[in-house]
Image (cartoon, rainbow, N blue to C red; front, top):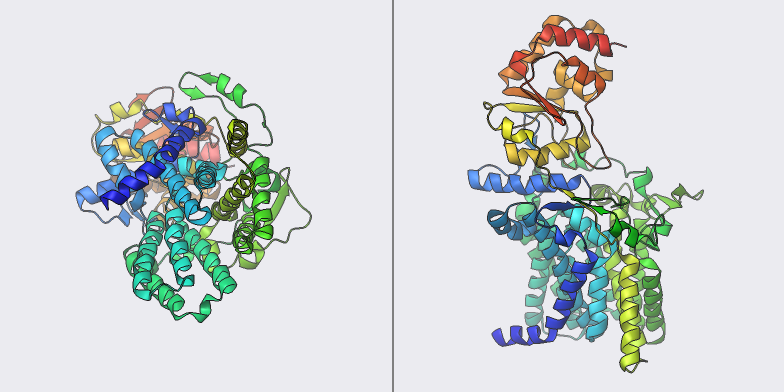
Length: 600
């Protein structure tokens, strides 16, 4: 084993070094700020930070990971359908204990990106039997716009680093089946494939579904092309793989299957608004609004902030150059090796599915609305995926293989002298530039000043205002530092009944949606009962946020909310927040101002 590892290291060390250098370039300037800043500006990053903290909190305190009392206080929140990213925690926990966040969070993302690159490189070596196209295949897959943005700012859906490793073992196993290998030798390969598949499930159920769709599509086409259904060893291998996968994944899947909220969570229809469709032009370049202003973005770096056009995290970018490479892969399939068409078919199918239920061009929907996703949108699995454009993460795997085959086809006619090497390097740079989202914008990690004052106050839960989906994720991130329960919270699919407590309390219902509160029929006794209930249930402090730094989803305390408590005694007041003690609030004044401000 040691000798084998040494051989692999000698073979791959240059490629690994180049991946590291490529990561530095493709993630600049984020890579220089990993110790102090967070990547990009998706609010899901705050939720991911909280989730890591909560799992470590639950493990160290002996709590149930699937239920948290910190959100939606005092009821708490069923967290069963939000499986912890166990594979990421393996890296995050020691890094967090040594260095804290945000470095641990950022380094975990970086490790995942490099694991994805190397796993795809090994897949390429298996498929191409040549290192240069294998390296390019891995680099394109790891640093493609969709993969990079999801890995950095939405690690739940972006933790796809184990898909190449699963496909490496799975494809190798099917190749050995085709070569009529003995079942006793095949079983170990399939057991390894099952283990690597389970890592995707333990990363996130969505990632497990992506891996299953990719592996299932490949085995269906490979079996049909090579008539593997006639071989007993094929069916035995699939049985071993399937049973082993079920057993290994059971600890993660069983709590979800038993959850009362499972079908409710997947009952929402496929999203049909702008997020339900992919703009065709976004596949061609990083951002059709700013195709050539990368250097301007670098020049606009200012202090700790990056002035940068918002990069829409949901879009997939492959670039014009990669399309030429992929076309070369299709030519290779037609002229040289027909089985390569398997990867073309998979790429085409998953690309069509990634377009969603509505196709856009220049952000305007086409008149012709039918897409393949409409046939599958009501399927339970596809409802669980929720956003159709996430299929782009599956599309990128076979597409990257096609890109590698395109280079493999070109190298057949090249003699790598100095001129040809320069041509090759320029081509690869153009390929990666075409899919890049370089430079990566960053933002400050949340460290609000008021927390030092809050730490001096007595125990008590917090009501953060304003309420809302995006601002709640920021509150969750801040909660890691103050450790107090909060009135709201947010996960991908909030279980039914999570808002019952908020809706029945006059004050909390007003903060959530004053339009649904009948102020005319409320008496002073109703308001007093609401405040008493909050105090009895452990709430103590109201934190009124003048502005919540959640990037494009700016949250501000509404004017009426500030007016309701305007003359109440303040514990703390700065440019960002005002803190009130609920026990010191004059309920009569608050109720009368609320009725006057909001009755109409």
